[in-house]
Length: 170
Length: 170
Image (cartoon, rainbow over all chains, first blue to last red; front, side):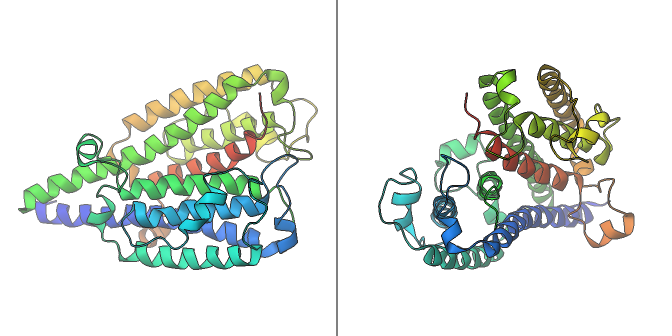
């Protein structure tokens, strides 16, 4: 292979692995959506197992953490930073009032649309640039701390909680 | 950037991406090991939540599924194909006899060492080659169905079950 062909092949590989990461993220969303569609709002107010988090808390938690990617990846303004208080900074049942399940469902669906759009617009070089929670110096030492790595990490985080959510059956 | 510099940068990105995927896999293993170290063999015989799989079943399931990567990625002979019967092809409690917890712990630790060694030996081009459950024709159409994608998928699978396992406390 000459250098030009090799460069073209490497560019194709780079697009391919971004696609792999985004596709695995979308697969987790599809599974989450399939599960969500089967459960009533009332059912989501129940804990996923005795003494564990309520499903509604895990749903709010996933929205808040995933929404955090918007600022972490420098994509724009977060949609729902107000959810951090009830769903990230505090454990389940810390507050008497949390948003209604129907509202959280809408936010979840809207957030995924917005994230998908942002992800589609980000070019290959940007995916390999540093995220906003790492300094220039640290990034020079640890170039794997890029935006794509954040998405890999958040996909695993979502899979982890989906494994818990599916304990609640329709 | 001239073409040679660009090619070198793209090669570095490719290695970096493989490192990111392998590191995220290792991170899940570390979390699993941290959890395993806290629980007695007796405790692992309990279900992770009422009416759900026993922890020992999920441990055996993760060993069997991860061991399956050895053949799927063409790395060599599987170590423990005999575990598929009790931990993949059948649900928990299908058999009166399953391997002792201590034996499964050893297999888990050994498998991870063997997989880490295989992963370290695989070169960048091999990671982007097709895995053994996809045909040449299908791979030509869907080049993301490569070996690296299997590892991304298995990492999510492990995170999913780890989310369930941690319901069992020391």
